[in-house]
Structures are given as structure tokens and as C-alpha cells.
Image 1 (cartoon, one colour):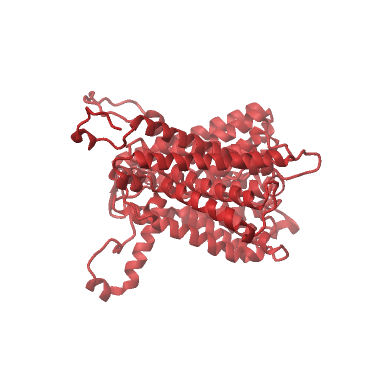
Image 2 (spheres, rainbow, N blue to C red):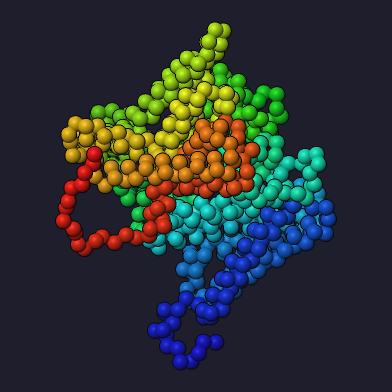
Length: 612
């Protein structure tokens, strides 16, 4: 019963009859959910030798599911606004209903369901599997809800981006440390998982879509571990915040204004109205490209079993589109550059994934308008999709990307050919040059032994890796726009101009300053990383290789001359930090650490200084 002193007017401002109790129940639900997810990971991650342990973990998951369901129903009965409660907590309400209905169905119809082998018997094994499925779905929905809540609070988008990658790396490290994530090899105990540094390095490399590895992906990790890596670079390539917003958009729910503004900054969209359509375009475009790529790449493994062939194709397709560079083969694609699946499909996925979602969206809208034709365009009122020209960002990205691909291909052929003599003069294939020109940008695949390249070719690769992909893409580096603005600014100064003009547009001075900051901070990070690698490894003869490794880590490329697996533990930690900084971006990290900036309310007199 409610206290008698509470008036009806006051009741209208309360959400529950027992607010403290409801708060405690929410805490219990969160604890039960986290416990169930951790238990689920342990149950499937450990190679259990005891049936009793496996059964006990399954019972714990069912109990956690029961606690969440009972707690949710209790809060619903206490609620004074049951219609709004169902709307706000539809995920947990649906979980509770499905858990009870499904449990009854499983116990009554278990004998007609497909057989599941396990120590607890058919009914309980099906109950465990059903509860695990519900827990995974609820965990996903709750994590997306949390990301949306933080986005709607006006928190610094840079801080949100950094925090999301920290969470992703942490979860990935935990999963890769589970014994089941590691392949069974001679001399290795079935209960032995990957060392912490190996799991941390791999999880960071996958989450930051880098591709550097200290252990071969195809042989060191089990299918479970490879699947974890696949999920990490898929989420890392698109971003956790993007996934959360995608779910909201697909569910038909409206993004809040502050939430939309946050996502606009993360996705680098010009208008608030573009965000929802941009999110849907990202989803459709990404998965369409990856599915088509996997279908076309399946022929690379004609002798493999259908399931293995499908997994290989999906893994490499997603890895290529996300510019991750992870490969299940022993030596990436060495010796396979002449196959059309490599020079056309893989290269195409890498290039398209590195253009940036904003550019792809702009191209889509332009093509959508052009396809209508002049008659239809004049007859149809201007709407959201009507856009007859490429944006300046798209033009700069396309011009710089094409220029880098041409320079990289010609440079690779010329530099390697000049170093070859006699019979070796024709050893450089155009297919290898083209593929490496694409991969040097940020992909991490290779069709040649990078350790055998000429020093001049390695320097060319270092320059291309440092520049990287384009803004808003799955790739890294300082980005093509940054280097374009820096070069345009230099040309403008040489011409005696005090501003940057391109394509009949003037670039704001603030963006020029940010571009110089990105390039400068990138150079600083690469130099510091190289210095630490040389210091820790004590191999000054490998200076170029260390510079190559540092640039590859910062630009999240993943290419290596073969020294990654030989690095000491301090050097691996340095590479982990460099990959993380390179993925979130040095400017983003600086903004996240700096927080909100206040504009000064004063100004000082101007005074010139000597420059030379």
C-alpha cells in the first residue's frame, strides 16, 4: 500500500510504487546479465573435462535468466505507468515473455526437437542453449542502449569514440584468452589459453583494423578465436556508435537531437538531416559489398569443404572491406596477384572501404539524381536525395586516391626494376605493383615478400601508409584530406596567397590548422614509436624495418617486413598503444583528453617574429 500522506498530484510524478526497490531490481538485472554473459563465455571458451562443470555453468545461466525475467515482471507490476514501461523496457519485457514461454515449450516438446548431446539430457541442454541465445540478444540490445544513452547526454564525441574502442579491445582480449579460442597444437594443453600480451595485441590489432599479428591467424587461433577476430574488425571498422545508431534507425525509432549531433561529428556528416540516411546507407552498402565480395572470392579455395570455403571467403571479404589485413593463409596472398579474385575483388573491396562512407553516400545521391534524367528531375520536386554535384570532400578524396594509386603502382615497378639486373629485370609484375599500391594505403595484405623489397620501395610504402585512407572510412593514416589541405596550403603560400582556394571554394583557416596538426602529431607519434622500437630491440641495423613497423601500426595498415613476431614484450606494448592511437586518430585523442574548450575573452597585441 502507498503511504496515506501521498497526494494524487504527487503520484503523477512517480514511475513506480516502490522506487528504491525498482532501482535495486535494475541493479540486480544488470548484475545477472553480466554474470550470464561471462558464464556463457567461460562455458564455451573452456575445454571442459568435467561434465559436472559444464552442467553447473549452464544452470547458472538459466538462473540468471530467471532472475532477469522475474525482476522485470515485478517492476512492471510496481509501475504506475505501465504503458510507458512497456515502451521503455520492451527488450527486457520481451526477454521475460520469451524465456517463460520458450522454457515451457522446450520441456514439453524437447523429445521432438533435434538431438543435442550433453551431460544434462535433451531437455536441459535445449534449455541451456535457448537461454544462452536470449542472453546474447539481450546483451547486444543493452549495450546498444547504453551507447545511445551516452550519445544523447552531449558527452564529447571524441571521448565516446576512445571509450568505445577501449571497451571493444577489453572484451576481445578476454575472449581471445579463453582456451577454446586457441587451436589445439602439439605440446599445448587443452586448457591453456593464449598469453595476455598475445591476446591484447591481437584484439587491439583486430579492433583497430590494423592486421599486425604476433601469431599466425590461420593456425594459432581456433575457429572460435578466428570468429572473435572477425567480429572485432567488423565492429572496429564501422565503429560501436555507428552500430548502435544503425539499430535505432532500423527499429524505426527517432534519434534525439543531441544524439544526432554526436553521430554527425563521428560520421563527419555536413547536415543533421543526413545522419539517418547515412547510417542506413552504411549498413546496406557495407553488407552488400561484403556479401558480394565473399561470393566472388569463394573460388580461391576450390578444394576446401563448402563450410571452410564459405568461412574463408567471408573472413577475407570482411577483412578486405574493413581494411583489416587479417588473413587465414600462411603468407597472406603471396604468389596470387595474377588471380582476378585478388587484383580485382580484394583490391576493389579495399579501395571502396577506404573511400569513406560520406563520399560513398554523396556519390550515391549524385548518381541517383543523374539516373532520373533532366525531364524527371524537373518534374519531381527537390527532395533529400536530389544532389547534382559532388561535394568538395568527394572531389578531393577521389583525386587524391587516384593519384596515390597511380604513383604507388608506377613507383613500385620503377624502384624494384631499377634495383634488378640481368635476368631479374622483368621480375616485377604489374599485378603485384597494383595490389601493393592498393594495400600500402591501409589494407595490410601482401602478394610479395615485403622483407625482400628494396629500401627505396620500403620508403615509398612508408609514405603511402602514413597518408592512408580517407575520412570516415574503415582505414587509418593521417587521411587523404589532411595531406591534400597541407599541399594546397603550401602551394597557396608559394603563390603569395593568404588563403586556400580549390574548386571555387575557400577552405576555412581552422581546417587548415587542424590538417597541419594531424600531420605534425602523426609524424611525432611515428618518430617516437620508431625510437622506442630501436631502443627496446637494440638492433640499429633494422632501422628501416622499425620505421616501417611503426608507420604500419600508426596508419592501421598491418603490413610488416617480418619482425612483428620477434618483437619483445615492451615493443609489443608500444605497438599496441600506437595502433590504438592511430585508429582513434591523434586529433580525436587530443580532443578527448582536452575536453570542452572555452573561447578566450581577451586578445593580445600582434607582433612578428623572425622566420629565417
